[in-house]
Image (cartoon, rainbow, N blue to C red):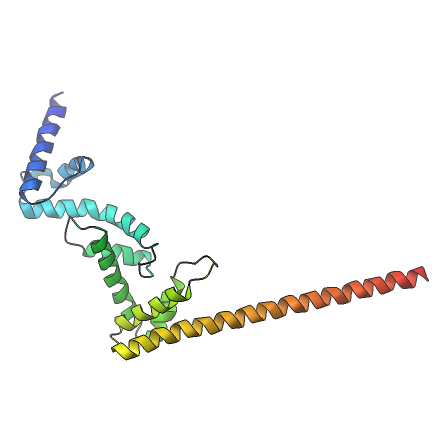
Length: 207
């Protein structure tokens, strides 16, 4: 009973300190926050914010993974999610701030490829599949714009780069679909020839 009372008192003290610092603490955050602060409680505003950031960054990582599946999200990898969560310094950050941090993390990674073409190839690999089990051409063009931004291409060059990326993907798909269609037609023709040959054997045996 005494332990429960002391936790309740500490929880109320944490809430009061957080409110004074302009922070809201959810009930499920109280126990891990007390544990993180340890003997530093009563804590300074700075220590309280740092402890709360440490707790929330774990939840932000999961939230970023969900946001990364949205149409407005950049093509992200797990390391991007970690970097984005670690870069946020506001404990009260919402989805808009999380997406902005994720975008910056992706831009930084893409810039590290050294050349726009290499960055584009890597970014396209990370695009989520559309209804046709391929990324939409709009997503490909968006990827091109993101790469152009990562390499600070001027406006006209950025638009041209994104347009070329979408057009190249359109041609690639057309060629792949044509090759698949030709392969199907070849198989169908081989099957017809086989059936005709088998029919001729049956006819010869009947004679």
